[in-house]
Length: 82
Image (cartoon, helix red, strand yellow):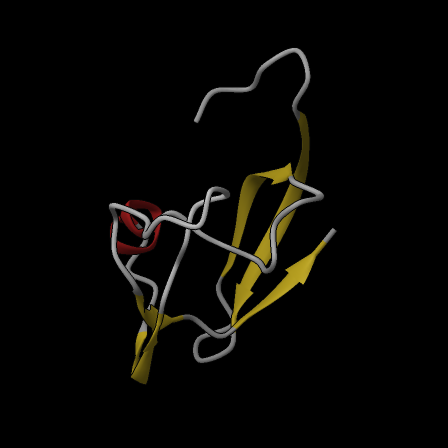
């Protein structure tokens, strides 16, 4: 996603819980989000370990329809520094 005029981006650091690696990333502040989310391509490109969820989390769009990307099936344990 590219920054827009109405987007609030801040530089944050994420630290992996397993190896302690620190990564600097641009964080998009979204007051309507229900949680903290990372791009799966970023996770794969930076070799960050993901854990499989025993029960997937269903993701719905604002209109209540299922998100085309599907359910959340994996999570990452990180420390967020801002």
